[in-house]
Image (cartoon, rainbow, N blue to C red; front, side, top):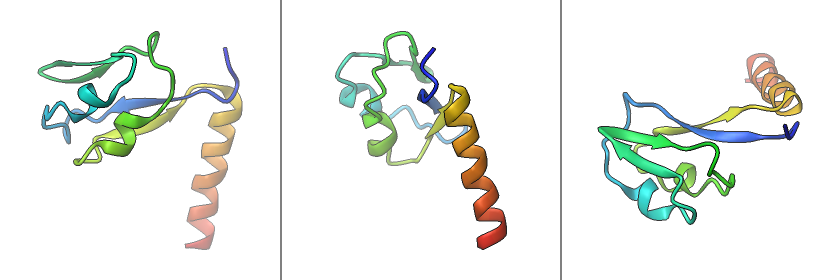
Length: 82
């Protein structure tokens, strides 16, 4: 597993099934099943779905150990310096 891997993940409460994420995915890893779903095995981490979602329903989820540490550090930094 790539230690820096960060994948998009859908917040179904925010998703309106507008299909912008589906249409923007160059490898067709995003599909609609009532709400948007992402096939992580097909995802190439281009993050187009995350960038283009008008509802901000697609968040980034750290999967590798280094990306989890980086996300944790960023959250810690926000807590102390905001």
